[in-house]
Image 1 (tube, rainbow, N blue to C red):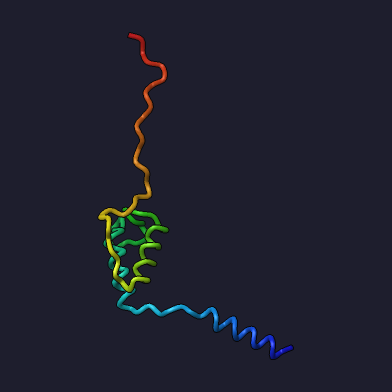
Image 2: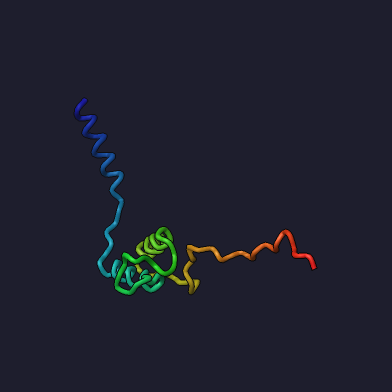
Length: 98
């Protein structure tokens, strides 16, 4: 019974280790591209947040950059904003009498 458990553990461990290492050059390049695409709200203070985009959007951009080896195509010049544009206000329901 014990050899069977050991064999199962070895198979599971070998089957789930298909991650790859990221080189320092690619990580640095992706960090620079991320800072360029999503500039910080206060220069030099990453805790102040980003002027554009949301956290999930930035993580997705960084993930795509890492997966492509630091070569990300910027099809759009502006990143998606986390704020929706204001809609047109409704006309008043009770117009003033003339």
